[in-house]
Length: 232
Image (cartoon, rainbow, N blue to C red):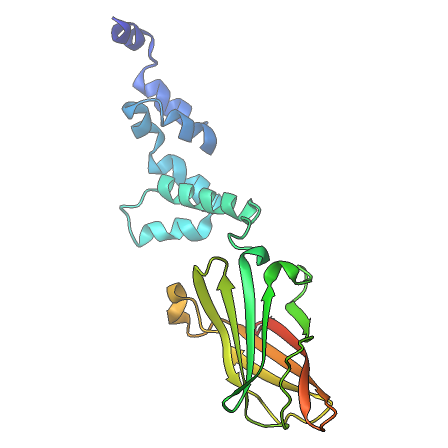
């Protein structure tokens, strides 16, 4: 009974086709959701082609490569993409409070210094490059002769030991001259999902400051960690 009443007052097919030519994209999309016949009339390529060609000309040209793709579909893809670009980026799933930084410096077979620093204790400027300094204050610091074969390992540990990422495992560059800084540098690998890109575009740099001891040997005084993009 309701269906008969609805059909009695439904506008003729020809009227809907004429009205469709005067609707904007948003109204067309809403009207297409009413029923199957409205979807057919509101999804015609001759209605959507002008909108798609005007607002998304590059997407509109894709229809020539695959005629099975409708202009309504191409417009929908372009519209969704444009809306996503206007959204604020999502908050990172991981914050510094979720991470612990572990740094080891070895000279030959001896561990010279080991530093474990919770990410929440780091003072980092969110608007600058990722950098933090660690002043080494350990009672059991190992003194050592100035060597050219120092090795540094920098690990990032997810709290709860749910995962570990090795940022760097590198030998020092240059000579570790007393009262200066020695440095280590290594490019990070690309994420597994983007391995075809070859490189990540990020480089980890670590410098260690040395100070003298009463015996004339050296100790690590300060460690500076830095992550930079090679594209900036």
